[in-house]
Length: 205
Ligand SMILES: NC(=O)c1ccc[n+]([C@@H]2O[C@H](COP(=O)([O-])OP(=O)(O)OC[C@H]3O[C@@H](n4cnc5c(N)ncnc54)[C@H](OP(=O)(O)O)[C@@H]3O)[C@@H](O)[C@H]2O)c1
Image (tube, rainbow, N blue to C red; front, side, top):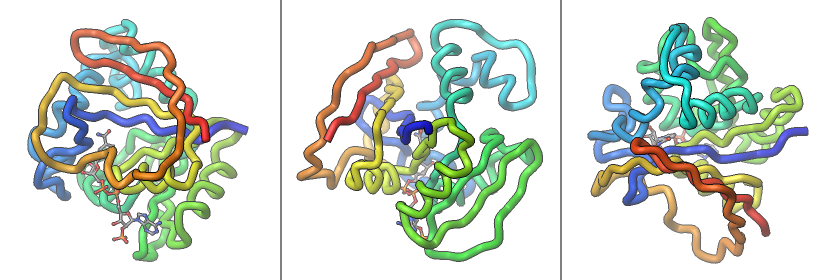
């Protein structure tokens, strides 16, 4: 059995998306800059059907992320932005469970990604993702609302945050409305490059 983990990019001031995030403006105003560190990397190229790219310490972080993830859980707002932005071969290449109150038939994409819409809540999404993950880990991919629910539920065993050297100033904040959480974070190694700082924590109750 794998674990449930969070792995998400944030600006230095704690936003996972800038203002005005919506389909057609994914990650909000300037928000895509928090993902720029990935774009030159070999594992990013490969995942998007290309070749070449840099093989360095950031690449190793991203490659491990892809390798370990057997299934994804995400919120409907994250999905809505990606539905029109992701290529036909969506980058997940694994089962994706979308939390929503709007029932919909599964959406199969080329390359192994199937989006399944779950109306039964977080526990059901995590259970189905765990069953579909083939022994690998389950990623709670975002957005902020779903990550916070998973933290509040005590479902997250590992929290990875990729901090971009960027001040968005406003937008979708990740860490808020978490009072009384009662979780202890055990820091793992910090890895930094000029483009991004990778933080990793074990989450203990
Ligand atoms: N920086 C990063 O690495 C990163 C990663 C992921 C996402 N993002 C960004 O985060 C933003 C979205 O985050 P968000 O917090 O606004 O929204 P979100 O977490 O993506 O989605 C929230 C929505 O999911 C549905 N939902 C959540 N919990 C549910 C439950 N228990 N049962 C049923 N439905 C549930 C609801 O949609 P219904 O309306 O269907 O009820 C809710 O409005 C986007 O801009 C996205 O680009 C950034």
